[in-house]
Amino acid sequence: MNQINHLIIGNKNYSSWSLRPWLLLKVKGIEFKETKISLYTEGSKAELLKFSATGKVPVFEHAENVVWDSLAICEYIADVFPNANCWPENLEERSLARSISNEMHSGFLSIRNTLHMNCRLAIVLDKISAEVQSDIDRICEIWRLCRGKYSTSGEFLFGDFTIADAMYAPIVLRFQSYGIKVGNIEREYMDKILSILALKKWVSAGVSETEFIEECEIIV
Ligand SMILES: N[C@@H](CCC(=O)N[C@@H](CS)C(=O)NCC(=O)O)C(=O)O
Image 1 (tube, helix red, strand yellow):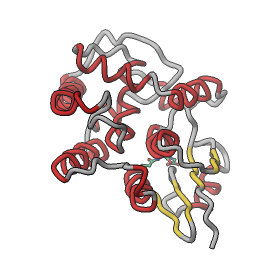
Image 2 (cartoon, protein in one colour; image 1 turned 90 degrees about the horizontal axis):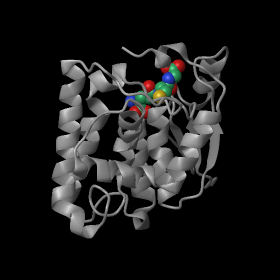
Image 3 (spheres, helix red, strand yellow; image 1 turned 180 degrees about the vertical axis):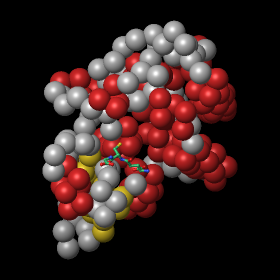
Image 4 (cartoon, helix red, strand yellow; image 1 turned 60 degrees about the vertical axis):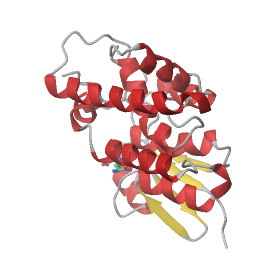
């Protein structure tokens, strides 16, 4: 049985979904082979379809299993590497961690559709729509709730790094890129995420990429 862990990802500058399982694997010290596909280029769809019928990244190959979709991959990693403590151990904490991770995965469409992850970008948005502000406010509320409950156990949302932090890491990068104003508790949390060495390496690799995806560069 082939036991290799193989994560297929998109451009580091833009692919927020790819970052989530990548960061989880890195922070948890799980070794893996990484294949990067330059998205929205000639031939990239055919390349993506070799790995998953969705034609999207991320995709994770492990043993004989192929898993696609960022949150499903994170759940799979939690299953096959139980010692990595990808979710909080306590049921009450785990239920909150799962809820906010799913809320991220299925929601915040205004932010996802207008504030594209773009590691190269550093601006301060002068106008924020009501819809985007409402997403920002809800995310800040989630971060404050978790930090209020679990700050004595560590500096991440549930103390130690969990899937919930991996799910929100691209939001931290977006808030940073677009100069989103947040309160002190949220800022501290953002700084903690930004201090993760693996994340710094992802960002610097993203910044060095030469591909330019026009749709992701539009600032609404
Ligand atoms: N819900 C999916 C979204 C995956 C997704 O949209 N991936 C984008 C990159 S971030 C992609 O592969 N786009 C390439 C394409 O559609 O051709 C997940 O959570 O993994």
